Amino acid sequence: MAPERQAREVALSAVSPDCVAVNQDKHDMRRPLAAFDLESGGASEKDNSIEDMDSIVGFEGQPQTCAQWPRLAFICRRTLKVCGVTFIFSVFLVALCGWPQCFIDDDNFKPNLMSALFAIGLVLVVLEDHLGLNKSASMLIVSASMWTFLAVGYHPHESKQGHDRLEHELKHGLQDVGAIILFLLPAMGVVESIDHFDGFAVVTAGIFGLTRGRKEALMPVLSILCFFLSSVIDNLTATIVCLKLLRHSVPGERQRELRHTIGGLLVIAANAGGAWSPIGDVTTTMLWLAEKITVPSTVSWLFLPSLTVSVVPLLGLSWEARRLCVAGAESPEASTDTPVTRGNLAVLLVGVASILMVPVLKMSTGLPPYLGMLLALGCLWFVTDTAAFQSFASGKAAATPDDHTPQSSEHVQTGGGVVAALHKMDLTGLLFFAGVLLAVGALDTAGVLRDYAERLVRLCGGSPVLICTLLGVSSAVVDNVPLVQAAVSMFGGNTPTDDPLWQLVALAAGTGGSILSVGSIAGVTLMSMEGVGYLWYCRRVSLWATLGFAAGIGVYQVERLAFA
Image 1: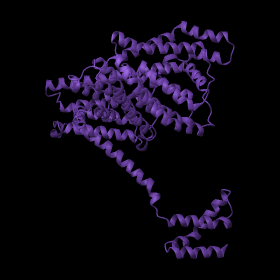
Image 2: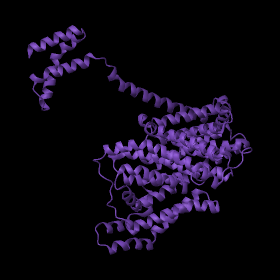
Image 3: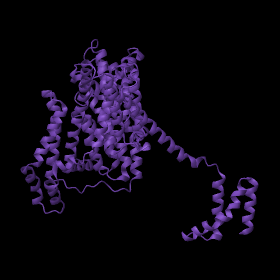
């Protein structure tokens, strides 16, 4: 092998003079590498020394650019993280110190600064996985800094008028945030309680019977269920319920990609289902309470466009789901060993009845949804803690000497009940909600959203279709409630009830948030419950959500041309 080695060294030296030094050092490196191969059970030194040395020569002879990419990426991530957090805390310190005063009192500077802070917060959320900074912490810091800067600008300690204005803005912002958080907290508690008592085993068994165990059939079944369920209760609760059912039907880390894909479709279906029902989405409810739309007209004109918004992404994402089902064909099937007992069924019926009580109370008494949901959680809690319910749930177990049934009944009686279910709730998601909503409230207080809505109207030249389309796309970035409220304020005096403008506002604002995962509460719920990343959602779901949104607007226009 020696002549061959010398020939190869001469050839390499002739090709590149830089390789001479490498080849010279090769003889010193040969012994350690050969010893490593022998210790690891590899081939002998005589057989492998040349190949090992050639690989080292090739590696050393190439440019080191590729090896520097990881360090460069690390430097970029660290720089972005430090700059973003430093800017946020700098604004906070400026507000805390009250200096320089010219920036704090400049009404033209405030909207720009609020927009910059919100944009930085969104960037930190988007790059959460790369920066290693939790999105809940990012939004809490951003929202607190925004409100601190706004509060100092009112000079509450120097004038009573400034103090009253600050109190008014805080109450207005906290009222909206508190209503959503107080709704979300008991809603998650009800769903977690049903899951804790294995109430979803009944629905999971029904889904398995309908799909015959085929995972590719889960997507249309859950999508249709979420679409109609969100129109009866609301899109947030429907998303939570359907994600729980999805987790039971597609368990395990090996099927996480499939679960995320179906979860993205559920977000689209939930938002689309809430758009054609006055009680399904908060923006549609706003228009209904403001007497801009009526129930019969909204349902008749918006049902088909909303269904289109949900069906188009279903057709597009179905091939991706089939591919993932084939790739995960060897994964274990979802567990169907949980017995369907009358205790499971009773918990499910009580939970569903409690949830359905929320829209009934809202329509009959005007009770806010968060109070209705708190009542629903209290009713479920009370019923499951009673001795009568525990006796009813254990009656089936006592009559059946099966090995699984007594364990299920014992779980119902001694598993901790609703208290144990509440301990399973993810509070980081709630804090993320609070941070986002508070930040959007700060934008609204600074006048950013209203200015944006006015510019939107001027840009579109008064075209209802173009205005509502851009309004829907904008709702994917900021909260749709302030945008809809701005539209009501601008067009409310001259536009009659059930005008196409109001119906388009309801459709666009309700479904446009599906384009981005942070554009709707349903999308943020998916991020919180399933750990779906912002960039993953953009790559896999955003395109189909955009196509569905555009198709829904187009179908509505065709309806108006054909039947108006």
